[in-house]
Length: 337
Image (cartoon, rainbow, N blue to C red):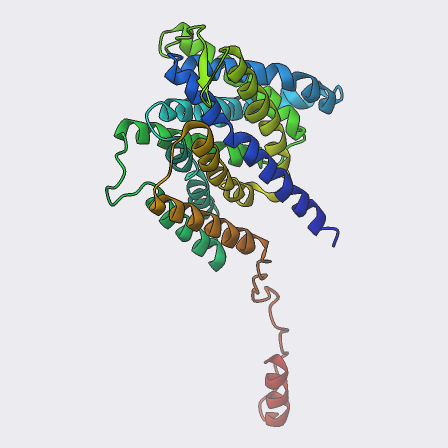
């Protein structure tokens, strides 16, 4: 019973984080439509998130700055791939694709993570895990509507695929054993992400356009800073902190597949906030993705049977017996067997 409580808390934290993350695309897309570049939106988003997480990150560290110094490689990799790359590619994809499609392509990251773990450990995942992965893949194909009912920007799909790599890195690095508290890793990684994007912006590789104009949300005009305040608080500072805790409690693979529930939530939010009505085939695909998540979680919860290996201890040696001691030789041979 005691072991089930952390997993239940991990599932609850993962679903709360998924809901928070799901607000990102629908809230920031009106800014992009108003002329903001993805680079400017993500830089402000991560900057606000880093400021909001600074206090909790320092408090959780409890003065153990030596731990942060020892884990600098993890922090840099997490901030570069799991924060900066995943967020920047996703926002760039949202500029060209419907929010739900961009998000679901990004969340093929769990499939990449499953394949990476399989190749590295050379241990075949549980049958239910594989079945869930296949089901989620089939659902993705329906959401992308590969039959041609939906017209999708190929550059947008390429950008979303880059976000998928960042997404896989996020869960892989967050689930790595470390003495760093989860919220400290999230906060420090966000600072690294801001630094990486600022360098790219300074070199001109990341265009920055941020017109301070009113933004239309739900048919109402709001100041430009309001969507930024929401996106910096809810799907950034809050979501990253809670999600990091969920990954620690569930493990990277289970948490990454659970996070696919963000897609359904984003579909609903984009429907309400942006009037992006999904096709029936896309709704069916989203349902398959959720079913695949459930199967993966059940497969991850199954205990792996221990491998039975032959003992390495050699059988006892039987002393030689003189010729003519047939009965004694037979008994000794039976004992050796």
